[in-house]
Image 1 (cartoon, each protein chain N blue to C red):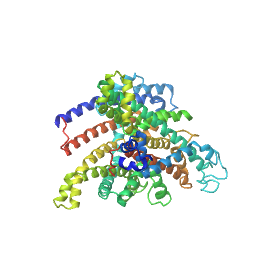
Image 2 (cartoon, rainbow over the protein chains, first blue to last red):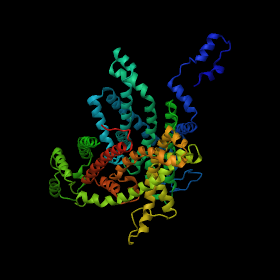
Image 3 (cartoon, rainbow over the protein chains, first blue to last red):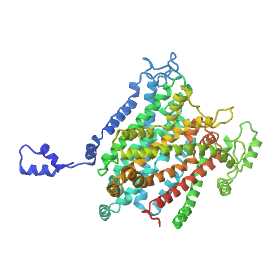
Image 4 (cartoon, rainbow over the protein chains, first blue to last red):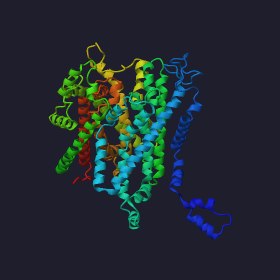
Length: 315
Length: 316
């Protein structure tokens, strides 16, 4: 923000020297959120993505009001029915309305995407902060743990963990999936937070906090983490998209949410058997995943640029 | 450099030990252990007991672990539950199929990703660049299995241009054309994901290099633009890409689980998936260990190549 641009709009009507000086110095306080918003607004694609994501989230939350039918209500007149005025997106092999199912499936997919992100960020930040702040054997132990998790190809680890799901029903299966996705996705954020803290903790203001007798927890929570918030927010955003894909893979291969509950991923698996007669059963749920994850990724990219004033966008 | 490599290799040993313990414990924690799943329910109690003893499953877990580890050090991964074959033979049978699929996909991906990354960087903000950005974002945001399903739907089911799976048409003598025909879709799916990520890497590392002073100097000397881009910029921009590709190489032992499963490709990924369904523990454990070894090895190799290509990096 160039302060000279601000003069016309901020110059007070009375034109007194005192207020003119204040205007020139631009003494308004800028919060991180305010500055970020100003930069983010200019990123058109990310704005579109944010609006789209808001729309998708709203339609998931209000699915019971928006959906024309119940997610499991069967229309015996339309098995594998093509898109029509009664069923806008067609109906599936047992006559269930695709539009309603896509809306309700979105609740599960988004719910798992967001909650697994929050748990992964929480555990990753916690472990990363411990490792970065305390160093020594704590750091060594936590970093070797991340090495172990990262030593397996992602999908192998994911599938092995999901064998634990067998026989788990309903809401519990959702909780299990969240835990499994968390278990494979906390490592990156832990390394990131550790790296940030390693460099931040050498700075003078941290030494000052030490000298004033602030406890380690206070230093980490009040002084270190707030300064590392930008990369955490960016990666949290990208993680939502990643986790929605991971959930869809699990559900697609039958390790994820169990019927009658369904997510976009399990709808894809359901539609596979009637793919030839009713392609809409596999097209729409996948399209929803694509649109959601694409919006999340674009939003994350916009946030990255907005939060880092020095980023000149390599592109 | 020699001491560096030796140190990295020594460090890898405790890591692999911890991995093997974690893995062994994890697989034995899964509900429905080997003794419940591996045997037919019609088996008599006595026969079941004999089998458990024969496989050593009655012994305490630490002893089972040590025996397993000791065998593994000698490349003896035990026998599969499914047909009693040595695990190493089963894996050996599948490895060439995975290598074929992954090797060709890697090659295709490199051949497409490198020119794409260079052009997108050189022609920054052009139509090509925007098109490329949209495509790579789509590639990253799309679930691989859905892309595969859509290809099967439109190209195999609706138009019957390509087979929906397998390596060759059953009941026909194998022919080169037939094999290629079966390769097209899985290679397309696998290489698409690699292209999306590799070309983005190359594009951003090219952009970083293109703005450096020595490139302006090269241009000022009167060198042609194409020569500057390809000889001076590309060679340096390639360094980060080499690391990424080397790390992706480690996915060979995991196979391409998703792609192989969808296209019924008889490779390691498919073997893993099938073994998980039937709880064939010896196979699962061997594959997980081998893939962990290959990830660790590829990490070391990537670091070594990096130090080799970039003389600014000095390992001590």
